[in-house]
Image (cartoon, rainbow, N blue to C red; front, side, top):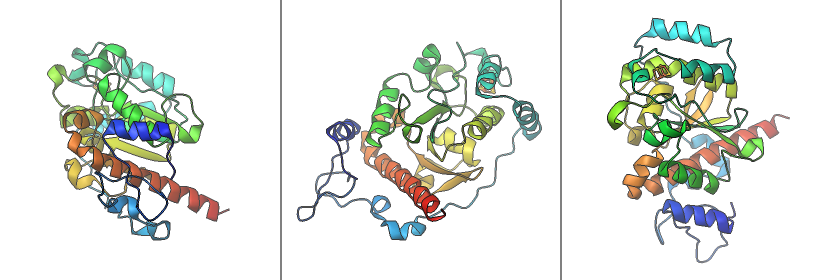
Length: 273
Ligand code: SF4
């Protein structure tokens, strides 16, 4: 992958420095520091892509499964707009009491990529948009470094962005498992409607909702998971990266893995024609 000046600037913004071998022309993306080798997840050659580990399907959390099933049935008939309206008046969990508005999603719902975050923060709640504040600026830089955008772009380069839980938890706390499960039918229906080619799960709650696991992000990274057949890559959320910039290099490894999985899918599609 060659890098434009803008992408280099975006990577710098992420805290990622590009590493270029001294004796070879630049070939691909970055390393976490000056002179360090490229991370293994990025260095997997195209011919060895099958070696990228796939995660075993975890057992799903089954909290409120009857209620979730009822919502899933109701949502099956809704399109994206109707689902957003439904979320705006939803009272299925206690988070409805503290929201200014529900935060449903941004970007083109026909996008090839989908970014799933945790829960709205105060900025998102005020704006009615996911990743609206400083974390959103970092997300946009991360997407730009991947040549993706949640704005105008060809569909293959667009990312639809949504929180896994649609209403802001009070006092900056994380959503509780019961709240995540109550809200999960919205996310499941969004994935069914958007039909992304790849999902990036940014955060523990996003992974919990999509994968039904309470495992920490550090144990979920570096593998290809699946949600309804769609590849899922887990990484740190931008808000975490703002507080812990030392994890930006690891996040960039995850994004490179996502790009690699997407290229695999393209190659497989081409081969099948
Ligand atoms: S968080 Fe989800 S389930 Fe809870 S009230 Fe909001 S939209 Fe409904």
